[in-house]
Length: 133
Image (cartoon, rainbow, N blue to C red; front, top):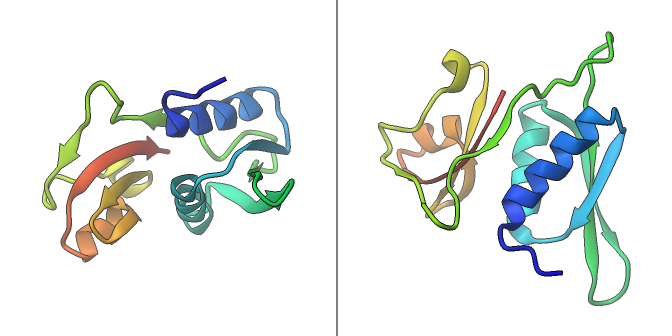
């Protein structure tokens, strides 16, 4: 089965794992997904991620979801903004600050995939991939 929007599929798998209260979820590997997982880990939204090599040509990513001590997920909203049918681009001054800085935006820039804060510090804009809080 071909996935038309792999990043949207990644976000959906994470949301489904949160709803089912799973510790981890597995998805097909891509470089963009690894960069998004790095951002989510560095910002404290997931516990960890690892790349699983199933064979010499097939890889997967396992993402471990982070929960509070009460059992609630740290992620309350994981939303894809830019879609294949309608790309959303933001200038360096228009990079959103979800929840007044308590959430993050994920931006694909000329310097790689960055969080909104890093994009503002590097003074770059780009395609707004998603918002997490």
